[in-house]
Image (cartoon, rainbow, N blue to C red; front, top):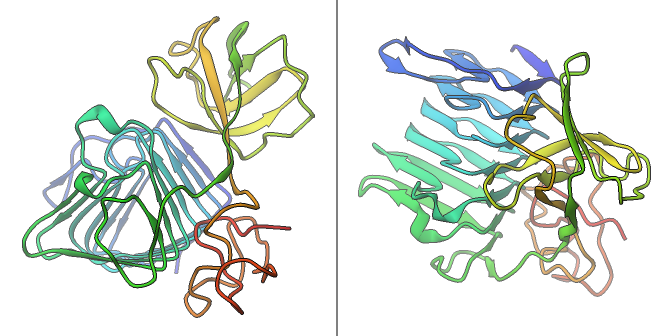
Length: 304
């Protein structure tokens, strides 16, 4: 089994075909293989961050942002503790049979006209212990011969009832957590990072590392993983200096669960991984959720 760990895939592009199938896996193309992909970040890879073609991948503790589409063709991939934030299609299934466990889906641009998830040609998707935030059921395209089964998850109000699902807001810690305007933007080619400066800010060093930012809330719907920060600078992977300008308004997001989240202790313990996306163990919080249940819904486990 190929093992890919703690890697960052940014701004990759693919063209051409694989066995007659066009544009598969701009970040990684898995063909007739069973790779374990763990602790990675995929951002703005075209087309598809990961293309699984007859490939039963195990992908866990991994973040997908930007053009975050994942393609599953004739395969049984498993996604554990993943965060998928997309301004276009999140997942395309063509005879795909993925299992998605303790993951968080966010559609960062609901009005772009693309469906969030496509279910084509006898696809069957099983989702458990996961959050669908800003993802509406009407944005999931399901052909007559395909189906999606969602259990122990938090969904929007328009989703049909499912086993032990709850509806509403996940009550993230910060959505947004902070906002402001950029006073300088430049690309550091030595670090392969774009530096975003807000000279009025006084952030703690590393406070926002591995949290999320939408650098331009007016015209750019992409979210990015924050590589690091200083007291007044945010670093994000890749070169997006041409897309973001001084004076643009930004939002910072923290997708950890707040103490008021309905996702705490309401997942299925039997199906949850032992740890969350950050390696935190499951915690049974007294007075929260279902009596005796420890696992939370989504990629992050609440830490009291």
